[in-house]
Length: 380
Image 1 (cartoon, one colour):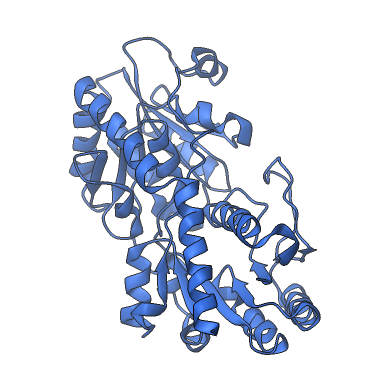
Image 2 (cartoon, rainbow, N blue to C red):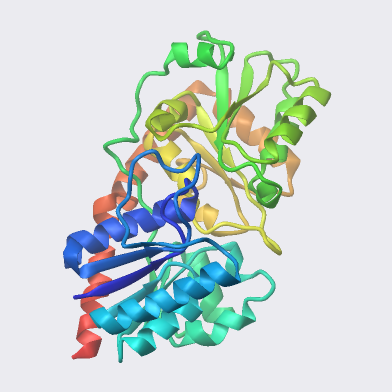
């Protein structure tokens, strides 16, 4: 099977790029690397993945010139290679994917969907094109149900393939005290750490960094409760300034951008992980990868109840599902997980077990393979 893969980006450290990297890897293993032609709209940039990733075309990014060149190149490649499948990694690429499909003279069209782009303004442009896809790959049941109910996509066209975790990289290991010291974080057997990790931009405030700061403020009298904020972006300075204004200089520590090789060690600094997102215009998640990677390191995870995040958690077993609009619930989650050692260890074991059972790369590849088999049967 020949596949033309239209990637929105595979170089940056965002969740979509990570998902696409796993997806391309699976397709190359299933169809043969020589049969998978990969395009990336965005080129490599500073602070992207340190390890290289082979693609066949690097675009110029967003904008009329960059996207027009991407569309034209995709059509030319489709006409030359005549793929059996044109795979769009993002709904923004559907016009390019549809043009490539036409140029390929009858290829199947597969389209990825995730979270907030589905319910944000302007998505009517993509509704018609998405309805013509032979398969819609959703990273969660929440988004899959949304496009069935709101976009009118036929349920049998939706294939849910949860994100996956590299279990060989992300696993429980002893906390590195030297790493805490490197970042100036208090270390000792009495300290307990709640970790969050992600891009810190104005557009990603919905991920709940301010909510975590507010929750930490409720534990001012307990010097052993520490918040670790990993990641970087244009909003990091505001968050740090707010932490100082709240008197949390010794409770909230900001690590900045994390090199990929250090990521497992950073997850293992925490005792629990928090990413409590809210859903709305320009807000919301599919299944975010960071809680899954933290859970693979045997950390209980706390997520929001408004989007696909909740699929990462069985409430009370491997973490908590709470409302992002309920500050008391956030404080209670910290108290009942972070400050209850027995409960935290129990949840941590369950977190690792669920990742092994439901979110392995092998399972991800298997579902992708079954989708390819289904597309082949439809052709016949």
